[in-house]
Each structure stands twice: as structure tokens, then as C-alpha cells.
Image 1 (cartoon, rainbow, N blue to C red):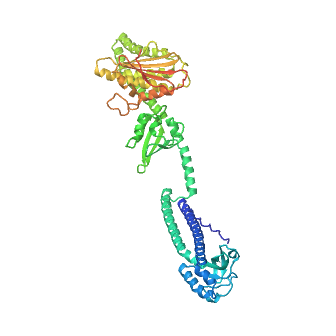
Image 2 (cartoon, rainbow, N blue to C red; image 1 turned 135 degrees about the vertical axis):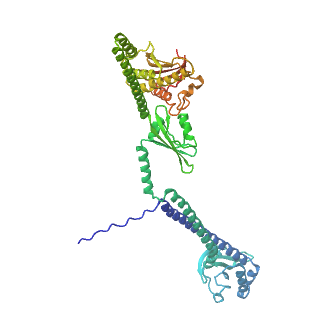
Length: 549
């Protein structure tokens, strides 16, 4: 039976905060230890210098004493100088004071048995009249010592004086500062360690205990997600400045260049969208219009007021399809109503025939057919573009069903194939369909306030290199002061604006997308004129007010 190889246990991964803590503790310890060593060396050097100055001063003072000069000339120098040297040694705190003759034979010494023996050290420079210091090992061990001459009245060297402090005594002097230094270094290490621990504890909370590799992978996943997600994502800080904006958001909002740190209100976005972002209440699935797109906006607060996250979904295609579906639904309802009317007329015709009133039956049937056929012939003859012709016929049926007469002006004329390929049928439906729908609503509202037959007049022709679409109604018209608000999302003259206020905004957006203009005028009622260039010209147009011709 073969032995199975057990998998080796996974090595635990230290978190980024833990690794930084170890590195910082090592650095703090190294810095403290280095500082302590440097401080010790500096203190030791200063202590040794102080010892040299001290022994030099003591040796010079003894050598310059008249009592010493008199004693070295006497018959028994040791009897006089030994008590004096010991008293000076004790009073000054040096390790020894030795007075000797010019041959180096000691007259004084802390150890009496060393009196009469030769001094251990260099005396050549002292015999030459100089004072020098050295570190030398003598009878008391290694010491810092000075040898200086004793001069008579004629300046001759008659004796030598040496004073010194042992290295052991100097080390004893360093013990106190060294202990203090060790204490300070230990305290500094402890404070640094505690501070490092607290800082890294906070870092561990912010990094959720993840290691460098995990953070690196998380960043790569984050970037890949931002690039792959189709929804626009914008992150704002607490001052509403852009922290992050992915590629989808840039495309949906039409933003270019560097955005980091720029306030959301300075990006040139629509005022309604900016107001929704800066509002106190989170936004849920709110539709907004940008320069060329319809977007659905959602906002949410990050944490406890750290900032705000915005998500944007492209609603342009869905909005266009929704508009087309509304048109189809309207056509269906109109066809259903016409079928019902046709059935009623057919019953009337059948009844006239059963009553033997054949001539009246023919006249009744052909009169209705002639009226419908005249409108169809007029539209087909004037408008060769099939999309516009079908839309006008459908809208005419809808308007008639609501009691509004839709007519096409005599100067309307669009040949098939004139419109450029870049002008999509969807934009044509958006523009003309919304203009007619708003005009029909306005005409009906105007008829309710005054006894005027509601009418909508449509003009569609090629005018000076532009496709001109003009829709006039017999409603109350648009107040000139409200012209700038007409093309904003949410503007409507209806009392209940829920679900309204988007049509004219979509018209302006489609015109802008195709390089056209929208004009607001007034005749019997409102007159809205859209001009779309057959050849696209640069520069975003702006809706403007004008008086309809």
C-alpha cells in the first residue's frame, strides 16, 4: 500500500498592517539603538576630555606650588610631598598625584610601597619643558595621565609632577549617564512601539486585515470591474468632488479630460441632474437627459457622509422604443375606433340598401371614403419619405379620434431619398411624433377654454439645405418667459405632470444630436419649428424663441 502524501499546511499570510508593524518596530529599534550608541560614544569622549582637563589642571597646580619647589630642594622630599600629594588627590578626585625627580624616581604615590621606584610612563617631553597627556598602563592599571615639569627660578627642570585618573574611574563616571541613556532609549522604544501598534491597528481596520497580495488583487479586480461594467459609476467625496468616474459614465455624460477633484457642478451637466445629485434625498430610477442621451440616475450615500455614489443606465434606446410603442399603441387604438366606426357605417349602408334607398347608401359610403382618401392622397403626394408619411397618417387618425383636425400645409414637400442616411428614422419619429402629440394636447386644452375648433397644422419641407418640421396648434401658446424651461425635463402645462414633461426635452435632444435647432414661436397658439441640416455641421445648437412666419 503506497503512502499518501499529505498536503503541506498553508503558510499563514501576514496582513499588510502586521508586516508594516514589524518593519516599523525594527526601524524604531535600530534608530533608538543607533542613537544610544552615538550618545554613549559622545558622552564617553566628552568624559575622557573632561578627565584630561582635570588632571592637567591638578598637575599644573601642584607643579606651580612654591611648597613643592621648596620640598624637592630639601633633604627628604617624600616626607613633605607625600602628605601634600595625598591631600590634593583626595580633594580633587584624581586617582594619583606623583612627584618624581628628573630620573623618574617617585617621591610620592597612593601606594607607599611604590615610593622610590621608577615612574611607569613617558617623561621625555616633560624634561624638555612640555606638558602632555597620554593613556598608559601603570601600577594602578590603565589611566589617563599628564606629566608636567617643576621649574626653578632660572627655568630649569628640577622635578616632574604626574596626575592621572584610571580608566576604571572614568567608566564609573559614565555609569550614571549610561543608565539614564538606556532608560531614555527604552522609553523611546516603548513609546515608538505603542504608537506604531496603534497606527497599525487603525490601518488593519481600514485594510480589513488583508495582505499586500490581497490588496493588489482587490485593486486589479476593482479596475477590471469598472472597465467591464456597462453602467456608469461616479464616486463623489463629501465636498461633491469627483473621486472616480468609469468609462461608461464618461460616455453617458459626454465627459472628457481629467475629472479627479473637480466639483460635480462644474462639469457642464444639466442643471436638473446636478440638483438631483446634490439633493438630500437619494434618487431612485430618475430619468434625466444629457446632451445626447437619456439616462436613469440612482444615488446613494457612502458610509456616514463620506461621499456619494452615482449609477447611470443608458435609457436612450429604451426611451425611443417606448415612444415607438406608444405610437403603435395609439395607432392600434385609432384603428380599433375606426373599425368600430366602419362597422356602424356599414350597418347604416346595409340598412339603407334594405330600405331600397340605394342612391343614398352610395352617397353615404363614398363621402366618408373620399374624406379619408383626400388626406391620404395629400400626405402621400407631399411627403415621399415613408417614415414621415406613415407617422403623419397615424397621428392624423389619432387626432381625429380625439376630435382634433390635423392638416398638412400646401407648401409641404419632401421627396423620397432626400434625407441623409445619418438622420435616423427613430429621431424623426421622436421629433415629429412628440411635437404632434404636444400640439394635440394643447389644442384640446385650448378648446376647453374657448369655443375654438381644435386644429393642428403640420409643415414638412426642405428649406435651404435643412429639413423643416413645423407644428402649430390652436392652444393657449407658450409664455415667452417660459421658453428656456420648455426643453427641460419635467416641464409641462398639464396639472398632473407625472409621466409628462419629457417629450419636448427629447425633441431638443434629438435635434441637438443631429446638429439642428428648435424654435418656439406663437401664432394662434404655439408654433414649434425644428430645422435639421441635411449636411451635418459642427457645434451644439441651442433651442431659441422665434416668431413663426
